[in-house]
Image (tube, rainbow, N blue to C red; front, side, top):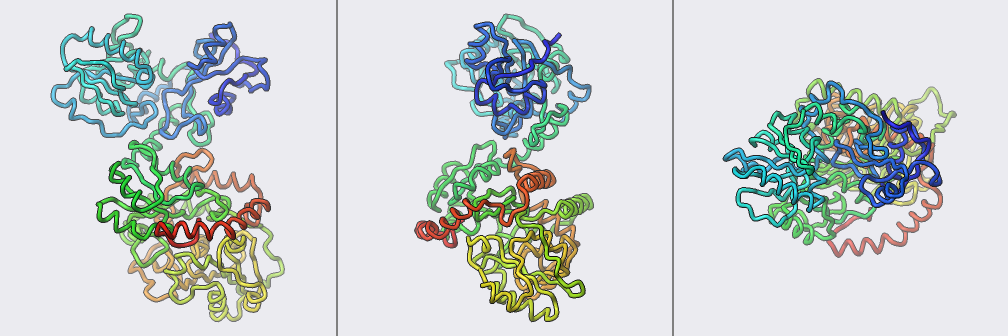
Amino acid sequence: MSKPPPSSLFPTGRMIRHLRREIEAVTGSVFAQGPNGVFAARRGSLAESALTAVGRSVLSVAPGPLLSPYDTPETGFASLRITLDGRPYGGGDPSAGLAGQLRRHRPFGANRAPPAAPLSEIVSDRPALVLVEPDLAAAPRRLQAFLDRVLAAVPDGRLVAAGPDGVPALRLAVPRLSVLAEPVDPWPLFDRVSRVYVASQDAACEAQLAGVETICLAADGSRGQPDPARSLALRYGAGVYAFDPWSRRPIPMEQAVERVAWLRETFAGQARRTVYVGISRWKRPALDVFAAGPAGPPIHTMTAEDAVAAAVRNGAQVQAWATRMPERLAALCAEAGIPLSRIEDGFLRSVGLGASLQPGASIVVDDSGIYYDPRTESRLARILKQTAFAPEIVSRARALRESIVARRLSKYNVGLAEVGTDWPAGRRIVLVPGQVEDDASVQYGSPLVRTNLGLLQAARARNPDAFLLYKPHPDVEAGFRPGAIPDAEALAIADRLVGGLAIVDLLDRVHHVETMTSLAGFEALIRGLTVAVHGRPFYAGWGLTEDLAPNADRGRRLALDELAAGALILYPRYLDPVAMKPCEPEQLLDRLSAVRDAAGPSRLAIGSVRHGVMRARYALLNPIVRRLRARRGVGGAPR
């Protein structure tokens, strides 16, 4: 019988403090400010050993048997193993459906190993597998002793030692034992070996679920085939708790297995290592998560030459921020046969501006062009032109679009909600969203109208009797980017200036939008408004907009939810900016809603002090940064 839960816990160490939310949730205890309650310590730590030695009660915490590739103490673990004074704390037997879930999804450890095992080492004669779990790989003496036990117990036949964290170099010279030094997913190996040797009963769990004969050779000298139900219970039973990888709330283990499987597939999809070139430091934490994969973390470089050299050394691909890509990079990559992609923010980005160094929660990675530049067909354009949209993804896109509208979300989620009440009720209201005038989308995608003043004049000429609203772009309004129109000059054409107001509240009140290439046009479309475009944005030319620029027609007609499926589901990648793990777009909506609601309405979602600092940065530092980037062959304004 388990001991009663401690009323309070005193954390020892950084890992325990990072996992406070999870530990409190499953124990019902609270963390105390002083060492008056039970101590909570990382399992195997010096603190745990010292406290145990002096007779203090210790709640020991360790990562559990199910982890996602993105798990850390800071971002949370998908499962924890908790003991109190050496005995499993709480929990219970695995559910009846867990074994089936594990067989279906085949998770193992941190799920970071490459999905393709080097089967050529073992396909010839079905050797026995010596399964080296992560705790053994991290303890060379224990690993050496285990291998000695296996070699003594199996005097003949070929053996292969492998594990999800690889096998460290040992002083072994046994020809019949092959050691796979690199990390290997054990599940594909289970299908190709005659039997499996493990160092503990719980380590037999996955091999037995795979149906392969499994022998335990424990350190105490015991040997035999563990009972499968017992192995599963030791692995996933008493003392083991599962958590949602994003919210970090306790959930059933079967649900955790499904969610970890999705994260594992996302991680495994980054099979080739990535070399970034010229990425600003403030963007790197989020972009590093997007590029993490079995081949290792991304490599950051600053010049085209260094990027190509690093890619050649590591067999990597190169990715560059689209508007900051060195001019020589494409030619150098083509010459070296290195895949090159451009990166840009996605269409659901953040609560706050990119120009104020607010990291983005979605990106697009385009190996063809980039969505805002119609001079080259982008991957998004190919998706929209070629995809036969299945009913399932159209239905999902409709639900996603409706949720975005219902939650009142946009790309930046900034602005105040006080929309004017003195607007005339009987007139057609037209919104003209301004843009950053040096953006490539304006320079390359708007052949006739390329300035905010020109857009405002064109909108008035086309709508002479309308009540015209002009909304400066938030980056321009903040003073970070070019494109400002003096108020008096703007008001000579527009009826109202609506800077600082939230785009979603404006779209609730207007009838029509006139734009060059602004994403506000797409946000208006998904809300059922009419949109006229003077440029060639990604959402134009499909029969959904009034296209005023030449050569805008794409040669295909799309339904609104087909456009949404391509732009919001198939093209971007998403990141939970709090959990710092990849996620689905639907999950990001939850997070953006929560972050926006917690922050409250704001003109720019940036404090006055930071706003002043950022304006000084753009005014004083950016000219220096431009010169440095020009030396590396990069043009454009620093971001």
